[in-house]
Length: 234
Image (cartoon, rainbow, N blue to C red; front, side):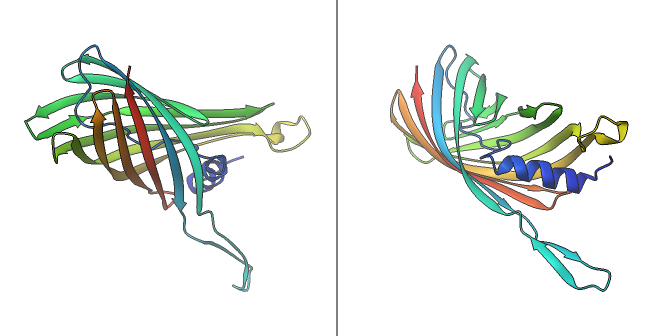
């Protein structure tokens, strides 16, 4: 069974999205890595949104027989652990409801009130039942910029590009014939950005509201997340 990129991504990604977050586009940290040898843990309630074009199904006469709208907004939850390996590098492990990810934050510019880093990362989600399985992975390359608004408040913004990799396999019928088995895969490019504000209340506690948004080209989808991180030094 052959499935186009748009159909696969539309059916698989949206169906997983309805399960509260099929993949993560959140950032949950600033451009500056945490100190060498230090560790942080953070938790964030998240709203995950999808803005999708309306799909119109027409008959042979051009009459509209059905309309579908895949747009949605669902709640989710994410957690993250970060550790500083040097003054210019830290790494994070992120868990969300049906997946996990990692990122590697490398500081390139560090001025008294300004910083810039590269933050490549990935996420992976896989679910299955019987002979049916779905995998969705993402690869990300954000560029993060910090602007210190005060001693305890940091604005973080930056563009991000990425790839969505989706694959599905299973049985399309109840019999065991070869025609009932199918596999499908697709790769879609994404581009967008993030903005967040980190407020450091004490040396060991901070809060960081943030917004992330990316446009998915083949599917013509816009994904967004709004999150509020609560972070603790451990």
